[in-house]
Image 1 (tube, rainbow over the protein chains, first blue to last red):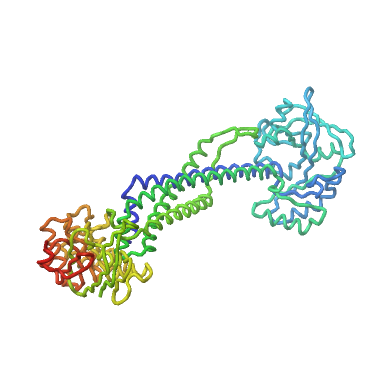
Image 2: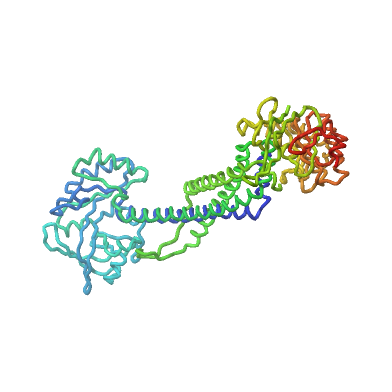
Length: 403
Length: 229
């Protein structure tokens, strides 16, 4: 108990210095955890948008579709896909399997034409499709009955709104030009300008008609739980894959997500390194000052028979209390700031986004824990190095200092 | 038993090197109050540091119970200081964040003694030193004499074989100093410890069992007629 009493009383003795140390450590934790919380929440939003709005959790297609090395578009298509759909649906965790057909064409109004990437979907199978999409115009996501949904930037260029007529012109698989009239069912935004400036969704039956084919590009698979992703992929590959099919996860398909994630991870690492550097500068300074003032005490305790290791433990106990207090303050502050920021509903424009993004910060206890452990280890390691230097001072020299 | 054998000690380096002790030999008997006198700068504190395991000699050996005090690992030497040696410093050297009670209890804590045992011994010492009313005071709330009594309590509480006192009355007024000397003497008799007491104050000869004088880098028995000037 005496050791604990000494540790706590020493921390309270120089309150200003302890306050500065607490501020530095908790500040570093708050900074890096909030940033990481923002990054992870943003990635979650992007992931939801990508999974629900673009790729599903998994996609099954021919290897030629993925490699894009084919002579004829037909080589990439799944023709007799009905039985495969039923088999995949029977896998536990699979909630929906929906065929898709994607091709490029020209969308034209009376006065304006623009190229578009048209994706044919089956709305009955893709019930959660609109989750993660923002409706810019139109009440609900509506395809079928010659209705087409158009990306926000593309709709802006074409100057169309729900109810307007539009014509899709493309070449069929037989290289014959074909056209179909649609009514604009709504305008959507995924948040990714790259996608919203080219994409349009139509019913798969309509896209098959316009392509003059009953085949599809891919089977989009939705699952109930992201944790089952690898196991479902494994079952499909093992049992139904063979050499004619290749299954890819949304993460493998989304090059943009991987790049964004890598970019954010680098930023987090850099930010953490900078904050740790600042903390170490500050802590090194305050610990050195504190130790300098306590050389006499070190000499006295050594003279009384306290071993170096026991003395090291004594000083590290102070560091332990300091770190634990700072990290607890930091964690509570993180939680509070996260709540406040999310409640404020701050919106911001970011490059590459078609609509303003809501700034959301996630509070992830595992992130707080990981950064806390890292800071705890780093601060205590450097403190231990400094203390170790001081407790090796010759006792008679240390005793010359006032206690 | 503590013994100095052919001990050399100097300070500084190169041309600045100043020898303080030169081939010093002496055996300190147990159970006695030994006063070590000498002029300022004669090396009294150096002898005390060598005997108490705080500073090793340049040459020669310090024998404790027949074994070389310094020819051992630092942890072992710390253990000897903890178990067998007690210190009373000139500037008291009390831990400022601990109360009088806690300062006295601290060596027992280092010795891993149980709480009940620690409490019993600490309270007993506090009573003998007439410090019971001040046990919860911090050193800053005590007078010089009270602080030194706490320091004496801290040295005595573990009943060490040897107690080293380095001019413990130098920072006290004459009356308090005399009280402290008498207290040390009384407690030495009670606990049977050996006291090696460094001072330049020749009045100690009235109290000490043995008086030694440090001169010309060597120890010799104190002779009032030769050394008093």
